[in-house]
Length: 310
Figure 1 (spheres, rainbow, N blue to C red):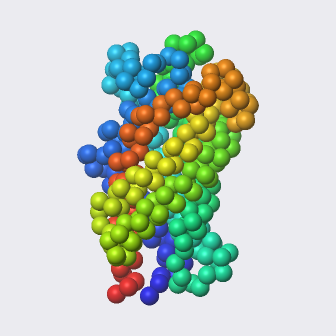
Figure 2: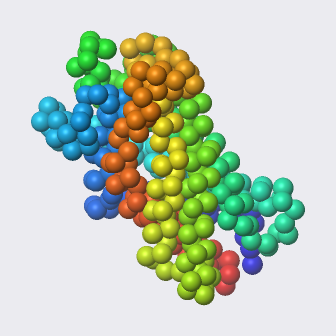
């Protein structure tokens, strides 16, 4: 028996929260222990592409200048962002699948196509952007604080989450946390279309090859599908993410123009290549992190759904 839509939403929300809660509290997490230094290198290279020769130079320079602490700047808002984003994303994904099914005129029990699921993921990302933008702003500012101070753009850096929050509130008020929101949404909509679309397409390919249901393809195919989805997301949206990071970080020193003007300014002054600064650590990070994300989501969701099939 299918659960009530409200119960289904709770299952999707719980599944999204379970995977990130496990990720935070287990010792070998890609996101926290391995992923954060890679994400820090990405943000530094996006905002100051001429300061570092490449990924390895960025990591070694940061370690030499600030120590290991410098590679883990912004970890707390990163954890909050991941938990909030994925909980809202997967809850909204369940709702949006029902909405897409309604628009397509499908019967209640009919399965959506991979493209329709990609559309549902794309719409769901609008809701997750609302909780992601403020926490990403704090995270990005902390990660690029050393470079902002060293380049003379700010006189004194804020080294804690609370100091960044107070600075934003004092300078721009509550709306200051949503600088870069338009760019975040512009990144998320096509990004999550590719994310969920590539994930579902990959799962379908495994199911066809193994001649089984998509839910029964096993651990390794699920992880590969999740990693593939994450890789597709970043390859498509990385330039928009670069623009978002610039807006959120550089707004510490002066009011920044919107997405289009910032995009054009980067391409004119630094070339298209600057929009892809930091892509290497992002791709290294995304495959294991998103593979684990979807594995935790699918297993916890499947376990909860079994209660209604009995």
